[in-house]
Amino acid sequence: MIYILEKKKLDQTLQDWSSKYEVIAPQFVDGVLQFHPVHPNSELALNESINTRYPPKSLFLPQSEVMLRYNPKSNQLEDVKVLPEERIILGIRPCDAYAVTLLDTVFITEENSDPYWLARRSSTIIVGLGCNNPHSTCFCTTVGNGPFNHEGMDALMTEMDDVYFIEPFSDKGDALFSGLPIASEEEQLKVKRHQTQVTESMTIAFETENLKQTLDNLFDTDFWGKISESCLGCGVCTFLCPTCFCFDIVDEVQRNERVRNWDTCMFRIYSQEASGHNPRPTRAERTRQRLMHKYSYLPDQIGKIGCTGCGRCVRYCPVGLDIRAMLRAASDFESEVIHAG
Amino acid sequence: MPDNGHNPYEPTPMHIIRAYFESNDNSLKTFELTFDDHKDCEAFFNKYNPGQFCQLSIFGKGEAPFGIASAAWEGDFVRFTVQKLGSFTKHIHTFKAGDPIGMRGPLGNGFPLKDWKGKNLVIIGGGCAFSTLYALTKHVHHPENRLDFDQLVVIYGARTSGLCMYKHDIQSWYQREDIEIHQAIDVPEEGWSHHVGYVPDVVKEVAPSPMNAVAVVCGPPIMTKYTLPTLVDLGFAPEDIFISLEKRMKCGIGKCGRCNIGSKYICKDGPVFSLAELQALPADI
Image (cartoon, rainbow over all chains, first blue to last red; front, side, top):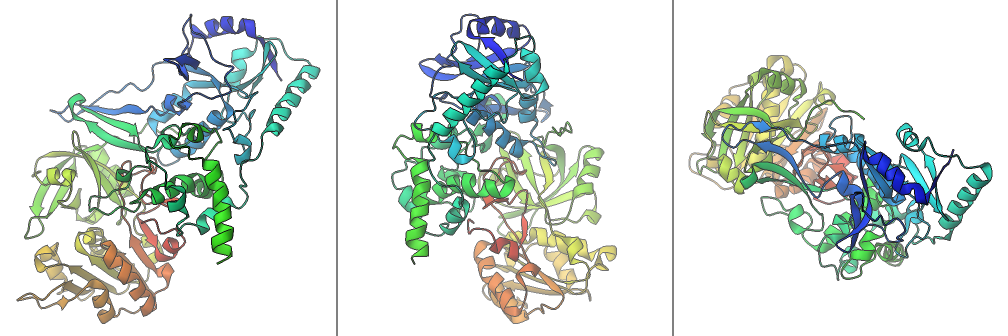
């Protein structure tokens, strides 16, 4: 079933939601496209072909988050409120919604679920927005995803002309739109055709079929040194990555808080041990960790590639390093050095 | 979504009941911790398996992982031996009996004791990494547990006699008939009557039989690097050699990302791996 929401009625819908939910959607704030709470005068930016600079993972795993608050005299813990209210995130792109499901496999497990992640996940409804104009840096179809993939969404909006066609994928998603008119069979076909057309217009950026094996074969080679020569080690590729989840835990003494902050495998100190030993002493090993985590280790652990093709690491690398080129080079390097040798 | 209401990042309130230096240079200090709440004690010992570790937590200073050095039957306490090395361990060395401290754990898999039933155990340790092997040996020493295993050989090396840990207890092992103990120091010292030399050489010299045996190795990287091939030369299969690993850690529950070797997390899937498992992983250590 597909609902029809006329664009001119979006404002009214947002207003209706706002009585029950906090609504968060992409907007230009300080000149940067980002997820931001929607207020009566907010101007949503749902038509951009470029995705938000920060991925919406920050709405579930904030860049800095208080885990525990303690009384330094008594050593007792004080309550930390995790989440204020039920919320709707509107306009998440398929790459980012899918990324949230990949992170679920890390944070929600039988043995130890992360209560902070879990609280935010359970109180959030995700209404995604398909991509009519994928950007040149996007490569979602290469990694098994797509511009209208709905994994991780409670509902998917497809914009066509002056309406949003809305496909619900959960009861919560359905409840948000259930009063709206339903698309005719012809309209539904039109939507599907459009989705297929856009999906097929995207080119494949690199081969993924034997990629894991290729990277595993390259583990002990100088391939990693070669591709990371110009890397500055700034970590922006990981901080802005929707599937990177590494964090550090530190005590903020002046605030009496134990805090977790985003961390990155691209920093030396990330794996530096107290003895002085570091298993990843140079950018070569750290680049290897970043790429192999997504294209070898996660496939091992959950059977899925840990990259959703959002293209942020390509767009924001200050020296123009491109993960797509790196992975194409991996296959070339393997045929030249390993198989030829 | 599974939610048992438990916050795995929240340290269990503990306090120190005994704290004493373990080495003559005061670089190693042992702490015995007990539980403020008996319910936590029960929960801990329901899960505890030798070879596991805990995150010790001091609010304002942070957390760091340490191997557990005591066996469950020793009493309602948990023992750790801490080497003074970084800022956290420097601070913890100032702690004394009565001081409160936080603890998260037991974490990790521990030794696969069920699979080792009926086997000979060859326990090989070097330096302060011997702590979890001490817990293993103490576990096996309990009369009920002793029946689960056949012969017990312990090889333990330290740089100097002054750095040998758990001295008085280990001295008493020489009187037992159910354990063969070999201690070694790196260079000769006056009054030292045991082995002199590096652990891999002592292993070669003692030459424990691989027949119906498993070998457990824990020590500094250089020691394990040379001990593992020595064991293979002696005829131990990679499936029968076990090693306990360490890496920088934060969460201890497989979420913060940093302690992976390939697709395995040392904190969650380890810290104990068989050599066969390790050989299947990339050399990211």
